[in-house]
Image (tube, rainbow, N blue to C red; front, side, top):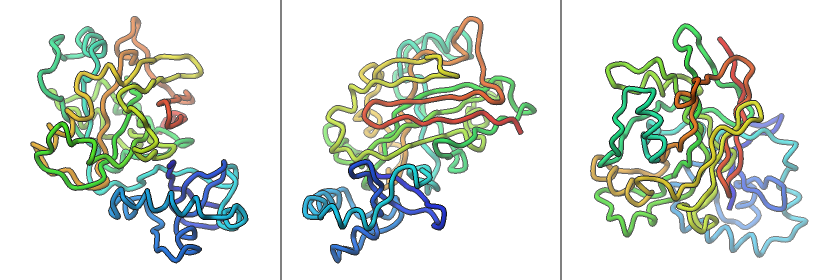
Length: 302
């Protein structure tokens, strides 16, 4: 199921899902089946992954005329970030693709040795923005605005000390994230100033439930800047896969429903190029993950 947070011209943010190229309002859909459903993504995740099977069953028992009464054409809505206001910081994973480790070692103050355990950082909730919005660039803070396409994992239930073999039981779904990074804002090895500025986590366009992704460790991901491809790889090249990450992170802290894990970026970032490339006012960046979609954002100098 492709879930999304959206609004119409006369509504606040709502929760919906895509059916036959239309956006079906989740709360209204529950209403016609006398099955209470929320209008917020986090509230749906809190209900547990089992609710997705129930919704899918109801979809199969719904007439198309009923769908039309509670849905909108895609061009009649504005897509918002799937989780507009995360309850906690986004969990970021650095240096999780071999070639990205190598390019970072050439140009940034990182080791050329492969990490022996996941490199963890975080991005505040205020970094989140949607597709078709602006990424804010403050040139007083950075002259090195960079891109990073990533697969993001959405946690579906609480977990502590999760065994690797059970890790996928804790996944609710997936989305696309562009881990925007200000390369000249790192302080004493700390990344939060580099990674944590407002709008530095565009995500979306949808949240795809895990049952729709046959193998999250075999998804193509790519990024274009002004129409030119800069990154192209596959999630099979992760150093630490999703099972590894959930196992490791849940050893450090409790994972909770709605937590977002950005699983790292492959090679091709601007900092790793010769000469280096950065994003500037008016540039358009497109991040794509197979099976999920593309997020498109424009750089806006402030």
